[in-house]
Image (tube, rainbow, N blue to C red; front, side, top):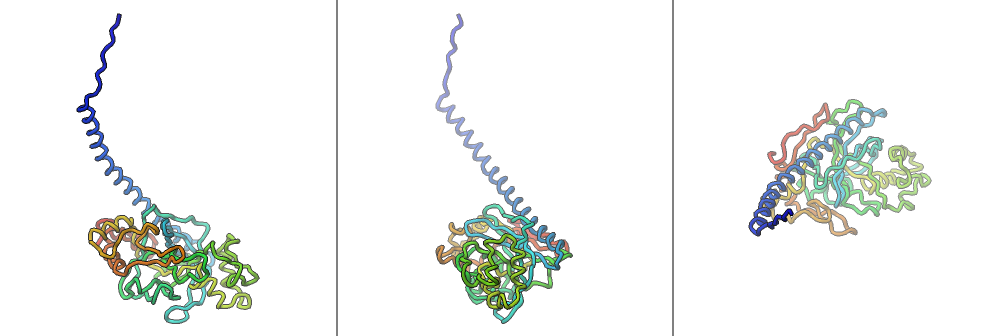
Length: 349
């Protein structure tokens, strides 16, 4: 007869020892895992930005009608930053602070997919001194605003493309961004052509059954037509008997909700908003109250009915100073159109 062996259970000391070892291993592995995850997202963000620039240059080189192409930068509050490849389809006369001005109009090219950055990763553009001359948020023809930015200084500007009421037809002055512009056929950076442009980004919430949309026999309906390149091109070249200059400005000018005022830049900053927030906290910036939960950025908005962006000018000034410390800074090569890295995150100056 075979006897049964007695089974001894774990003592409390042994059990606590095992738990301690597990806790230590988890404590060591979590930071390593988080670091690996952040490195992966950083690589993804870097690759996505580079891909968007390559595609925009490719669109310019493939141009058959002599129109340039741009990589345009967008941000939706609470969402992600993304880039669109847009093609030049014509121009429109408008008004800026100095009077009448001619602006080229660009429309997203459906041949290229939207390039979306990982959550929390943003791109800012470097606005050179004296390029920001706006009087206030609602000033027609003002690229950004001197209420937030010091126009006589260099500024890192953020894509203010989603801080508007999409149901109103005249919210265009609240929408602005920056682009990287490439010359048609050569694909070179458009150094000489650095004036303001308009990016077509139509709202789907506008009531288009009334003025100013009932022009040219009611043909201007971006909510019903998928070929926006053709639609906007026809609108810009319509005879004055069908679309007056005043109506054209309300449909496709800076006043129009469907368009975003933009300007070419040559330097870009790629960064994670949490890195910038940590830097602002470590510097004890009084104007910094944290990342806004509603927008997911440093901007705050009053309400859905009044989505005008709010950001303290002192905070803007500190971001200008601190952003190069945490961002990868890229300078766009004039001839190849690629982003040449000037500073690596955490080691910039």
